[in-house]
Image (tube, helix red, strand yellow):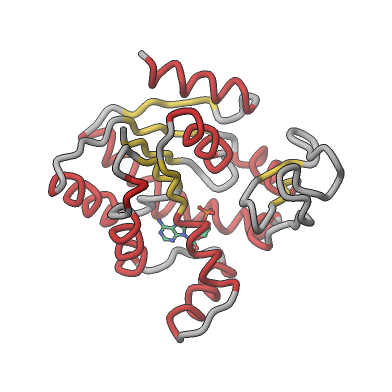
Length: 215
Ligand code: AMP
């Protein structure tokens, strides 16, 4: 099973992807997490550039991103299927993904689009808390950890990601409109997109996703 989650930053893709990966026993591939790992301790010129681009809230060049995903989906944990969270984000990425899947004779089973209101997103992202080690995502109001500021799973300290700050979110929303919105048009032409109300509660969104998959 191959699933794809598209939606603006902060729409809840990461949280739902983790739950879906657990539920269906498939791999979770988050290009954002992969780039965050790279920028934690950048060594090469390219890694340093990745960090700078991420801090600005812009997109990493397609060739770098595609290379990373190509390598990742060859790993054994992807054999049963995978969820792509945050990829593709440009039309060239979507075109290359189609070719990659065609080459291994695997169809793209579902494209889910998370629809959300821009200003609500800015607010939602401002309250997000992130656990760097476990990669779990919490929210001060909507999904608080059991103990304030600590991850439920690992006990590590939760942080606010720089890219969750309001001015960064607004910039990333404009990047989404310019570069990722055309990906929606691309899939509308070639595949069936399932649209979800991303403003629903985490459980409501998860239930809708599972209902669609289990049909
Ligand atoms: P995310 O956690 O998915 O919101 O991604 C965080 C950042 O990683 C983005 O703002 C981009 O700088 C970079 N990134 C993640 N996925 C991609 C992608 N598919 N193409 C280009 N850049 C990406």
